[in-house]
Every structure is written in C-alpha cells, then in structure tokens.
Amino acid sequence: MKLVVAFLSILWMFAVSAEESFMPWTEVMKRADTDTDGVVSMNEVKEFSHTKEFIGFQPFMADHFMDLDTNSDDMISNEELKTGIMKLGMTEDEVSKGFQEGFSFMPKD
Image (cartoon, rainbow, N blue to C red; front, top):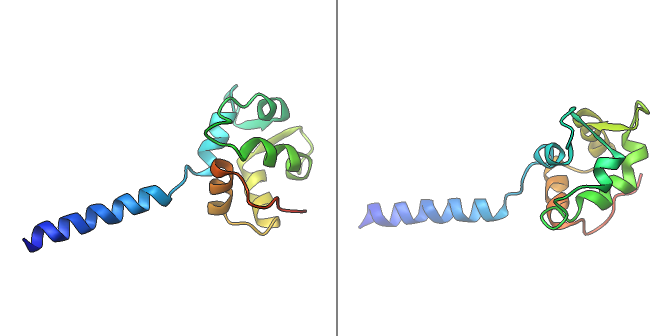
C-alpha cells in the first residue's frame, strides 16, 4: 500500500510540474523561424502562425523588435533575445510563460 501511495504522489508531482511548465522561448523562436535560417525577421513575427498557442509572442516581439535587434540586421537571434530579456529585467521562464499566456505587463525599455 505504501508503494502505491508513493507512486501516486510521484505521478501527482509530475502532473503539477507539467501543468506549470511552458515551452521554452527558444522553441517558440524555432517555430517563428519559418525559413530556418536561425534568426527571426519582422516579417516572420508578423506572419507567425501559432498565435492561438503563443498569444504573447507577436505583441512582445513587435513592440521590442528594434531594441532587441542590437546589430541592426533586421533579424533577432536567440542570443539577441536572451540579452534583451536580461536588459528588460525578465527571466527566461517569464518570457516563456509570457509567449504562451500573454504578458500581464509589457516590459518597458
């Protein structure tokens, strides 16, 4: 009986963890990178086809694109986004969650 209770407890912990987890922002960027060149353009942001699944991606990227594009090549790399996340005072988990659920606030530069 103790083994069953322990097993059910472990399953419950995994269910709670899975419920609270979000797709990493890097995976969302891969989905946005439709030409698979390793960067995301403003056109790819505008044409992002997963807006129902990731409701916060387009607004965030559109609002911050110019600031995130630190080398002014009209593309956002993962490294540029990671640096931008830190400059905005956000964690990677907050951005992952924000991409999926939408941001409860829009970070300011």
